[in-house]
Every structure is written in C-alpha cells, then in structure tokens.
Image 1 (cartoon, helix red, strand yellow):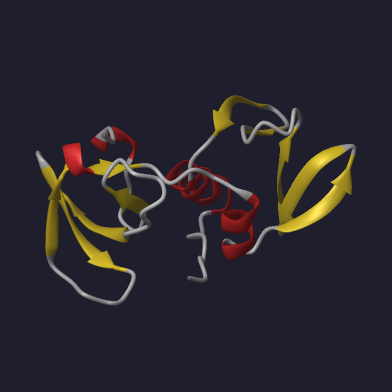
Image 2 (cartoon, rainbow, N blue to C red; image 1 turned 180 degrees about the vertical axis):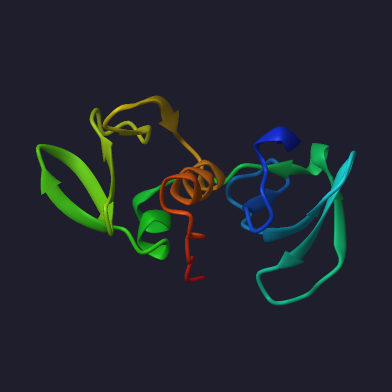
Length: 125
C-alpha cells in the first residue's frame, strides 16, 4: 500500500503486491481514498484505492528508463544532468550526497528530482 502523502501527479506506481507482475500506472488525480490514473498503454480514467497500489522498486533498469547513466564514482553511481545518486552497499538502496533519506522507489526519485531541478523526470517506458 502507498501513502498518498508521498504522491505527486505523474508518479508511477505498481498495481498489486506482486513485484513479478508489472502493471504500471501513472497518477493523474489524487483523491482522499483513491487515485485516478493512466495506464502505461495510454488508457485513462481508471481509479484505484490506495490499498491496491504499491511503489516500484528502484533498480538499474528503472534508472536507465529515467535517463540516468552509470558513472564510475567510487561506488555504483548514476547521474542525470547535475543529479547523482549512489548505491554505496550494492543493496538496492540509493542515497545522495547531502541528503539523509534513502531512495528505494521510483516515485521517490521522481519527487526528489522535481524538488531539486523543478523539472519532471522523463521516463521512457
């Protein structure tokens, strides 16, 4: 389940709690108990309860879809424009210099990128 306080319009989420099934939706409207979304395939106006939505784990594959390039900076690092994140322990938990939080999910990266740059993260599906 996802906490609606973490969401912005445009965030990508996974429907269902099975990480092997990748039904990805894009948030179009945030409501009190649900979100209206658009599917990857372009379908619109589909509504899901928050209990049905889960974050997408951030992986090197997703970083590539977001435009980040692997850079050799001491540990596993990825960079897009001036934003760089690192997987210091190769455990799938990404961090950023001068940011104490962890970046584990695609929507967290989308939100952080927007906060830092003022631009939405373009994701190639």
